[in-house]
Image (cartoon, rainbow, N blue to C red; front, side):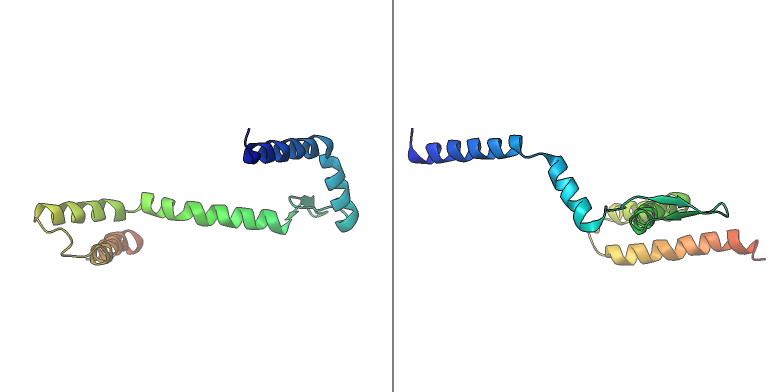
Length: 125
């Protein structure tokens, strides 16, 4: 055995011994003593029937909404269909990047707003 493998096996044995003998409850009790417990995800019911959520739970709900909303907007509008048709048209004309993607997205957004404007305001006659 070379010296490197002896050192690595020794370090592995020491690490395993430390992991086996150290109890996770010691770390948790130390945190509870230092901070009085960490109420990360708590929901408190008020006397008037409403609930108060902890800050970390509020941030979790906000980040979830910010993650899901763009996919819902793209799924409920015609933007995706318009951008696909415009990119297929660009490929059919034989141009690789002549109208840049930013221009195609701007045109698709304009057409989406134009199309859905009649849904919001009724017929424009």
